[in-house]
Amino acid sequence: MYSIIVHGGVGVVPGDKQEAVIAGVREAVLSAIPILEGGGSSLDAVEAAIMVLEDNPLFNAGTGSVLTFDGDVEMDAAMAQGSSLGFGAVAGIKNIQHPISLARMVMEKTDHVLLQGSGAQEFARMMDVPSHNPITEERRAQWQTYRENFLRGDAGDWPKLKALMKEHPEFMHGTVGAVVVDDQGEVAAGTSTGGVFLKLLGRVGDTPLPGAGTYATKFGGASSTGLGESMMRTLITKTACDFMRMGLDAQGAASGAVNMLSNTLGTEAGIIVVDCHGGVGFAQNTAQMAHAYFKQGMAQPIAEL
Ligand code: ASP
Image (cartoon, rainbow, N blue to C red; front, top):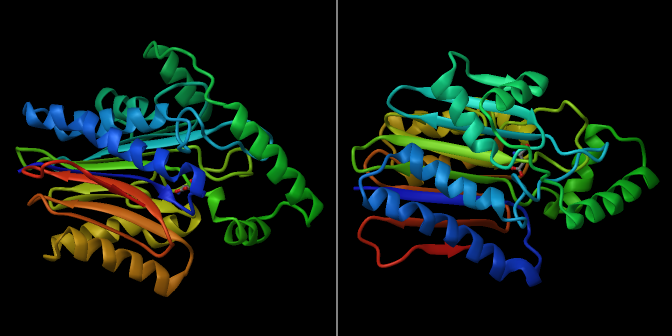
């Protein structure tokens, strides 16, 4: 039995964008269903779903990624495979359309787990990945406003940025992720993000780090969203996978992992989870986390905030 769940990030979605965001996560799931229906792999399904989300400028991944403090885009992405504990990731990658595909290439074509910065860029060139500008006019305008507001307050250190994000949860909205179990019981998870608005150049978030933003084992997989620094410190996706190894289903693992983060660091977090038996789960401690899922046998995907 196959299942897929995707997320479009935690954070409040403005009223005028809600319909389009729900349609976006639904479209991502729909793009992966024919792959799974035809006996395709969970890795192919995760990649296809995330590519759709990376191409949708509403989400903070690929085209439409948020800008750094300096007005650039540096993206992070990761792909994980459960049975082999396979993991490939890129951090701080610029000017490409699909960071998730490059992350998969790191897993499949190198002996490394994570390539960052200029090395990741060089790897993209070697793999003949075409150049693509992911900065949209809308994101640039938002960046200008946020940066001005930020500079009008105190200097740009992280506690201030965290306070700003609490006031404006929409800052974090839009990271994307997908977790799939295919017909063979193979689990895969992927996550892709532009990071957080106004991050310092060189800041790497949780997304490309195993067990933080992305993880998969033979028992299940997970992709998280929220303030990356907290995900790294709590290893939230590894925690969810450990819960599944101990026998919890996907929903129990998702709820348990978010509770753990809420009870420790208390920052905003969301997670999507799939277990090897086809169960899907999701949990967040924020008002919203755009997500959609489909389990073999359902008439159509469920997509909601
Ligand atoms: N986790 C991402 C990061 O900190 C942000 C997000 O999920 O929206 O890079």
